[in-house]
Length: 228
Image 1 (spheres, rainbow, N blue to C red):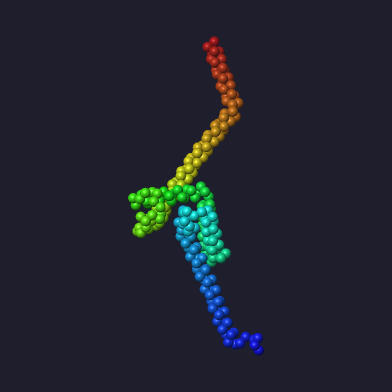
Image 2 (cartoon, rainbow, N blue to C red; image 1 turned 90 degrees about the vertical axis):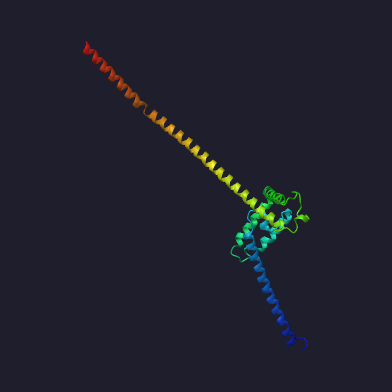
């Protein structure tokens, strides 16, 4: 019948379906591979530089940062990525976005990166206001971006070490103050105990003194009688 598909047309549609299924499998595998690659990139990114973690330019707007975070967080979400460290990468990504969303923290990071930029430009004998697009910064070996990244990394590490040292010193000072307060409390406690012990033995001391005084009177009287 004319309405029934011929065997030849059915045979042609089968390879087409097989090719489509193979493409789907390959695409799925490629996507899974890319997710794992992205997880590895985040794990290897410099943890003190949130821009590196999000793989975004320092000049990015707040909206661009949020958009990039949404894209990456969905891409490497542990529910979609089989990488064993996907949850860790997801948390690192979230922390980076949080830091760049905090105005004060982002300004601190930008200040260090800007200082690194000034340092690199000075080492090249260039004005500190030289833009990245300046021809003098092109064709350098290593490239200006690499030098800036390395200098920023070193300065961020130095800043983090100073921060940790300050925290350690504060903790040490707090510990010293705590020990002083404990010693003051202990001294007050000892003084209170000594005062109490003194009061508790008052009657005993009075009785002892009376006994001593009476004994002295008896000896004196006896001496007078002997002399008489």
